[in-house]
Image 1 (tube, rainbow, N blue to C red):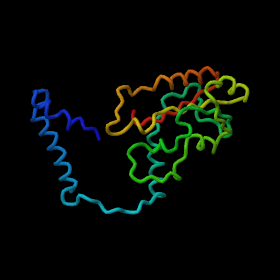
Image 2 (cartoon, rainbow, N blue to C red):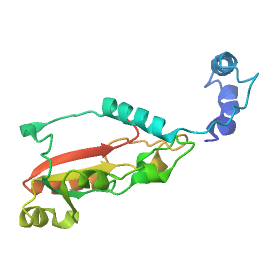
Image 3 (cartoon, rainbow, N blue to C red):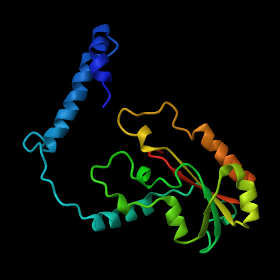
Image 4 (cartoon, one colour):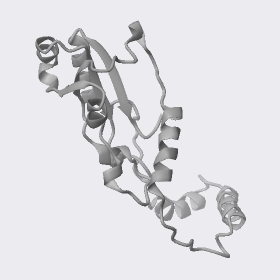
Length: 193
């Protein structure tokens, strides 16, 4: 957790930049929330065995409801089963990054990367983005799947980014995918909107 409050709050109050009443009100809200949750009476919770199968079913349901389709030009989606797919991008083979920052108990064997998920339904080939045009056309690819995103090391407490846009080098990957002349499907794995 960041030390910004410890390092600067006293000086900000002394200088008048932050009113002491604002601090008191903020702290009171936290204490009231903890009181309502019973954290002062029972500060430690009983460790319960996790039912991964049940939790995975719920996670699947939540994921299906939270996925957002931003655009579907020329009805590219859904891809036909068995389609030939060229795939690349920094999040293509990062199953551990997809679980995010806020995990307490994680079983790596339950997480698949995007490449493996694609391979279950499509004839997928991982390609070098430098040669996307050549690969997509030489191998008679139906679509290019570009998997962009950010690692969990830049999300969560004390890891805020000043610019939450798509990084410039990933925009270049998107441009390379478009130059292939094939239908492009973008998969965005970001821990924020």
